Image (cartoon, rainbow, N blue to C red):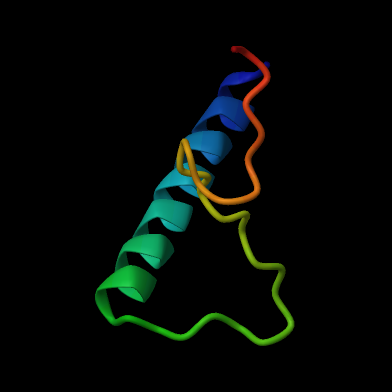
Length: 53
């Protein structure tokens, strides 16, 4: 990986972090056409089967 590619990656990650920070801080609604992230699974929740007994 070249130095210019590394710097571009750092800038891209920083930009993404900034956009995420402001979107969360402003409590913006998700875009209707965007894919929703998977929900977190809680151990022992309904629908989860125990494979070890």
